[in-house]
Length: 63
Image (cartoon, rainbow, N blue to C red; front, side, top):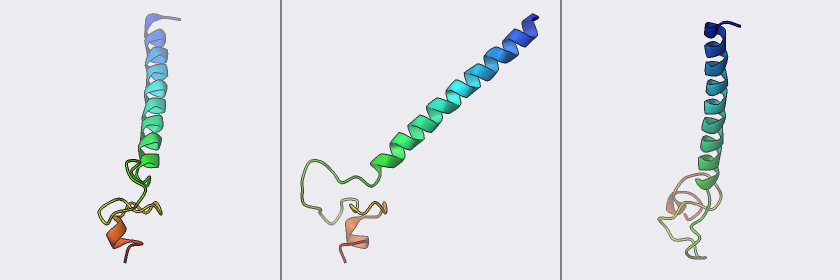
C-alpha cells in the first residue's frame, strides 16, 4: 500500500469513530428530555411533563 491509501483508510476509520460518538451523544441527550427532575417527587407546573412529550406539565397533562 502506498502512503495515500493508508491516509484514506485512516480518515475513514476516524470518520466512523466520530460518527459513533455523535450517535451516542445524541441518544444520551434525547433520553434525558422527558425525565422528571430528581430533586422533588411532586411535578410542578413549570417542570417537564413526566409523560415524555417534552412539553411543560402545565401545557400537557396538568390542564
